[in-house]
Amino acid sequence: MISATRIFGIGHAPDIKVKITDIPGRKREQGTITKLETLPVFLDRESVKGKGIKVECIGHITTKSQDLDFLHLSQELAVPGELEKNISFEFAFINVAKSFESYYGNQVTLRYLIRVALARKHLSNITQEADILVYHYAQSKEDLIKKLKMEVGLEDSLHIEFEYNKSKYDLRDVVVGKIFFRLVRIKIKLMELWIVKRETIESTPNAFNESEALIKYEIMDGEPFRGEFIPIRLFLGGLRLTPTFRDINKKFSVIYYLSLVLYDERNMGYYKQQEIVLYRRQVDDELVDTIY
Image (cartoon, rainbow, N blue to C red; front, side, top):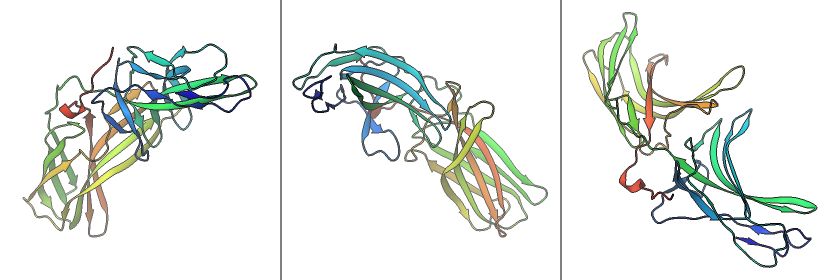
């Protein structure tokens, strides 16, 4: 809704509000960890409707060194003139191809937004934006049960085998596995399982990487013995993970790893990590009606 005394005159500054048309049962989630408001979730090819004046549907990527629009649709909703009272304008971007999922990271942001612009003669333009979230759900379940098996060895002092139940997990999944100690000749005082996220920003001439340990889960506190095995059960549901992203618009990737970390009595650390694939699976309470 827009309220003002004049659009192009010298009157009071217009008050612009953008309202995205909602449907019953649409899922809403936070766009970032720090945002207090929730945003409506849309799917690829789903229409986006609402109210504004000149309105744009934009897909935008922001990195440390670059800003890029990969989607830009525009509609003129009103001709130049005066506005004497509150008025609203309907808009609809039909069957919009939203090629990538929304992502709010430390070094890169991929966001979708509706921007309303009001041009004023002899005065600066007034704009207002409203974000929406875009989710992509996995279509295939191939290769989801492939197990991960790895070994950690340190000369003749340490030999550990560990196994995870699969290599691909949905965002609400549980990592189930076990660790088997075949040889232990050093004093291990602590063992942790980390989930590490790595953002890679593709830029010319060099790529920039940043890794972040999202969680450090203590598996063992104390010295293990040869022949001992330790079960692993790590719930992913509350960790605010995203799907794995690879070479998104040739600008960035987001990869996740399971990292096994051991510390000996001298606080020396030993690391072994393995890439896992995360995907978004649609479940009953996430169903969103699609408008075409």
